[in-house]
Length: 451
Image 1 (cartoon, rainbow, N blue to C red):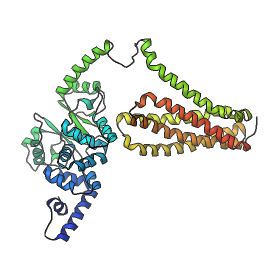
Image 2 (cartoon, rainbow, N blue to C red):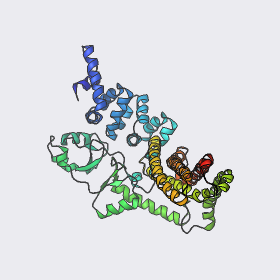
Image 3 (cartoon, helix red, strand yellow):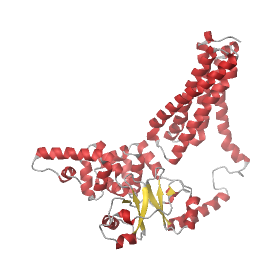
């Protein structure tokens, strides 16, 4: 570690001015080079590392902690003052916070989560929880990775500090915590302490995504002599290891659950479910959809006089509504997939919304120009062209925003986005599309030709 950072760790020196300058330089180093600082902190005793981080401003502490390997980060959470640890968990990237919490025993983990705001704690619990039939549910998150810049001596020292025994290999990550290779314990044991870890690293035989279905990676394990399968998240960051024993036990357990499902224990509708069961699941949503259709019809009814006077509007009305519906469906599909794969969390709503606003505006302008040309060649009315183009831009912009916001809001309030998102989105796009088109036509009626 640099001399400036060492001063921050070790405490005052006789020259107070020099100490202050060195401490300031140390904080600058931590803020500007968090990954390099993280690798040095990982070699420090936990108590000294916690003392260093506790002395830093909140922004510096969070930035460095995010870059530290998850097992060391978990130890720091227990060593930091409770308020500082809670702030780090709340402000850090949710994936980093969840990875570190997964390394802790249940009691300290729950104690830390209890200090967080309800929404933040719920989000982290969701990230740590996986469906039963995916890799993340079966993995062991307490698998300390090695840094690619380590030596064999560093790796052996790290291995001795691990509680796990019976390991055959360890996995290597880069500066961004992405999995890049593996090192066999036997190779570490017979190597010189100064040997770079990169010289001992071997290619990965197989990797599972944390949301990969169980059947896929079980087949892979059966086809290859793999005793430990590394698991990564959507960004390629190492999050845990699936042991062969866990796979065998999980397969047996899933087989028994399948037997239960065969005798009707499952609540989900299947292809051969009874008609009464299917009706009970589908009919409520059809009734809700009918109510939203009446709402859209009521909007059209508000402009009955305008439609009667300018009949061309009735021809173009489905065009505007249809385009906005398609734009909303695209945004909805992308957002739903991102939520399902955990590419985003509720904290990212503003970034998703901003992106969809830009996409909706650009697509709206492009589609409006094309539609405007078509309307002009069809009707020869510049007023009708203006009405169509303006309403197209507005409705597609709002549709994109709604497609991104609806599933996020439903998830925020504890509802399943897959159940209601499409119905709510259809309502929004129809109402906005009809209202914008007919409302603008009413305002610009002096530019339209009756008939």
